[in-house]
Amino acid sequence: MTFAQDIDEIVRGSKAYDNQFFANCRFFANCRDTDSESVSLDDVTTMAVNWYIVTKHFGLSTPSYTGRLARILKYASAEEAELLQKLLTEAASISSDDLGLGHEELYAQYGGADIPLWKRLHYKIWGDMTEKLLRATQSSSYSLDGINTTNAESTGLIHQSTIDLVGKMEGHFDDIVGGVAVYQTVESIAYNIVMAYSDLMKRFTQGTDPVLMPRDLLYLEIHKPLEKDHDVQSTHMVDTVKKYYERKQGFNEEFRLEMIRKVRGICKSFGNFWDSINMLVFKELTREPPI
Ligand SMILES: [Fe+2]
Ligand SMILES: [Fe+2]
Image 1 (cartoon, rainbow, N blue to C red):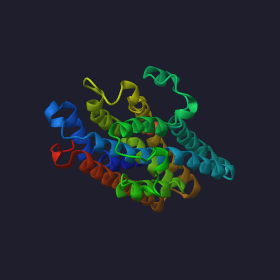
Image 2: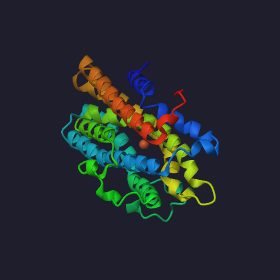
Image 3: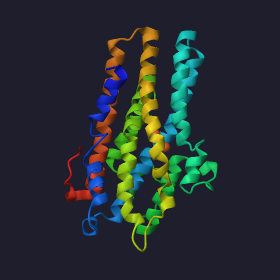
Image 4: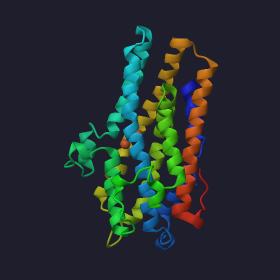
């Protein structure tokens, strides 16, 4: 196995990749209406607000990481620059997808052709759906843009595990290895996240008076194909950063251990986040073991 495959295995074997929450979402998609009564719109709305914080921080952190790579690239030797350029291209490509650039056909396919570019930032698309849920529950007087990790506690909506996860990701974007560790973890689990949320949202798009229309699921639909690409790209990033360190200072044990430690740490934070979201949404309903 290559080093990148080893890292991939760590993510796939963790609670970040599959967990009780995802399992319950799968169960929920196929259960009878009476079973689904116990999942409340209020709780799913709070979940959406927490995910808004996570997806916003990730989406707004990756451009500064690519900026950091570009600055390091400027002063790198020709041999190092070749690999840094590759890493920058991969990181920027994922980042630009999250900023809503390109992939016109995907937006058009799922009813988002009319969305102006400045509203296509993915966290904003998720935010539009979340605002709709907030209006439907009338449970919050907060504007979504006004909720952040600083005032989170006073809103009572943001979980400690969300704040911990966001802090962990942001701290890791301060260095090359940490940034790749975040990309690799997030992009390896992203497809499963999208599928779990899609299962969960089915209830709120069905029935005679649905809370959400198909157009509100744009964030989820466009991510289904995108996340398969991001998964492959982020694994390439692990390969590239390994080659970079080999060329720069020899592939040493220190680099290997740092990558493993950081990926494990982010996986743990995601695992805690999903545990917390599972308790919020499913409470005592927990009944399906993860695969
Ligand atoms: Fe995205
Ligand atoms: Fe992604």
